[in-house]
Image (cartoon, rainbow, N blue to C red; front, side, top):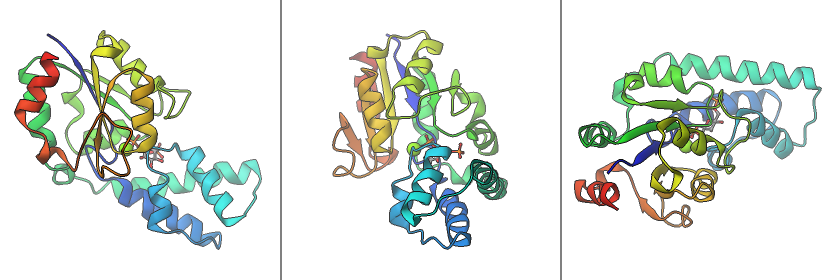
Length: 217
Ligand code: B16
Ligand code: MG
């Protein structure tokens, strides 16, 4: 009884949102645009291009295509300087426990992230070798809520979408999982992730029994 378990990265495995926040805030402020934690929330699961478009929109600022590309580059260089300092201490609570359990149970394990830096981050926190397949922002053409990222992950695992389970912290990601016909598990707040099949605050709330039930479903 083999299922595919697909994990989002930012907000599920590690909290890189705080580094995205610092880098986007610096960029926005340099352009004279305010940037709040609340706005950062709205960028979760959203691609780099879409994020910059949103920030410019909020500030009512328009720039040339060339400057747009330069700013994206600058943001990423700044973001990577934070990633550089990451260690396995930054893996979110009980993630290794769940990954190890799934491994022991011989389940398919994949990463499904919008980030183009996913592989770098997984290496920093020493989880790169845990996944049978890694699908990230460099492998997709359509961003979440489009299901592409999760569909490719299922294909790579050679497991039908209906037999896949997705862990996601963003609304767009839950919508993508639902559109892919997969079981969606929200990691975060129930009121925010109301479209998910199940919601847990974090992995410490997910019991071994629950995982076993998912495997045997
Ligand atoms: P990058 P996820 C997403 O990661 C982040 O939630 C989102 O805030 C970010 O803009 C996006 O990756 C792109 O990241 O600039 O590194 O390519 O949650 O899909 O793992
Ligand atoms: Mg996320």
